[in-house]
Amino acid sequence: MTTTAHDITKRTSIGAQRNPASEEAILTAAAEILREGGLSAFSIEAVARRAKAGKPTIYRWWPSKAALLLDIYHRQKGETFYPDTGSTREDLIAFLETLLGFWKTSGGEVFRSIIAEAQSDPAALGALRDYAVTRCRASGIILERGVTRGEIREALDIPLVMELFSSFCWQRLLTGRLDPSRDQMAHVVDAVLTGFAAKDRAAQ
Amino acid sequence: MTTTAHDITKRTSIGAQRNPASEEAILTAAAEILREGGLSAFSIEAVARRAKAGKPTIYRWWPSKAALLLDIYHRQKGETFYPDTGSTREDLIAFLETLLGFWKTSGGEVFRSIIAEAQSDPAALGALRDYAVTRCRASGIILERGVTRGEIREALDIPLVMELFSSFCWQRLLTGRLDPSRDQMAHVVDAVLTGFAAKDRAAQ
Image (cartoon, rainbow over all chains, first blue to last red; front, side, top):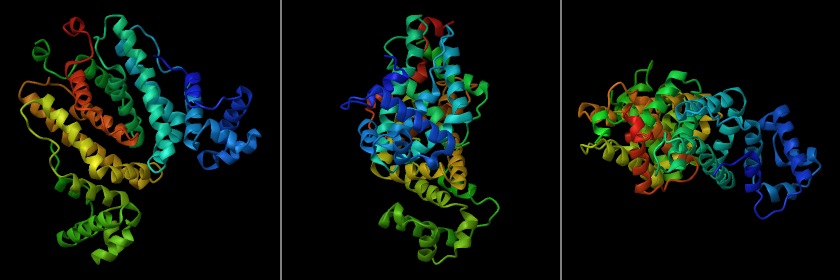
């Protein structure tokens, strides 16, 4: 059920066998261009030049600029998003804090630009949709662990409910409100974990 | 607590007294341009020409193109989003269905273009942020009615938890997945209303 950075890379390579050395060179070049020149400097052409790779090779492995950007973005995120504290509540709060914190300090500009591009470019939309679906499955590990511990009820559509948390973060990013307090994040998590319904109703 | 289309219009007029007849002429012209020529035809210049209004007048009342677009978008939505069925569960499902349905049939293109523009235009971002905050307060009426009926527990930060539902819709719009089934929408609502926590834990 879980997906690692490696899986993401593999996922986008369907139908085109990648050469690991070239792939690494391309991803490294792309990350460098982004770090040095920002989004405005980022193009498949610039990446091809720096990586000494052909543009057709890049397009065969990443069908759109957005797909390549998403791979770099995802590598930058790292694997620190699903800490296992032993408590679903704490894991969910940490997930919100880590994602919003990452966006605030570094990855937010790239991710919001990808979302913006996806609204006018069908290839970017396809890459973003795949990414969103994959991430909601991956972050589901937080609730899966809770189910195993008997903390979270079974028969929950886990990717679907994880969408609620990731969507909350998206809207915060897209409206420039990346600064909810820890109390607000805890309130969101608590509201959802214990339900909105009045206690006597919930017990029915 | 609730906000009507009229309030939205008033909200953006802070600091500039509007002339109702001119305001109506501008909004009508803007809506016509959007309907006839789509987003690519829409500009403050085109609106000014058709409404026989000065561009400075428009900019005084709507500080950005996005702010004007949001007003037209909101008028098109109408006031059918918060039906009062007597059940919070049904009201929430209807809210999700109505919003996603509206985006699917007409308003989605405009709204996603505003979100995209907001990622590179600070004035558009400000207008979108105000709009999002106002709408989460307005849609809170669904949960407020539930509190009054004793269905929803008190001490809930209603606008904050309504963000979960609206954010879910935003992510669906922005990833081109406006077609969750009624069962999926009901699952999201039920999961949140009754909580994810296992029943014996919830009772603690």
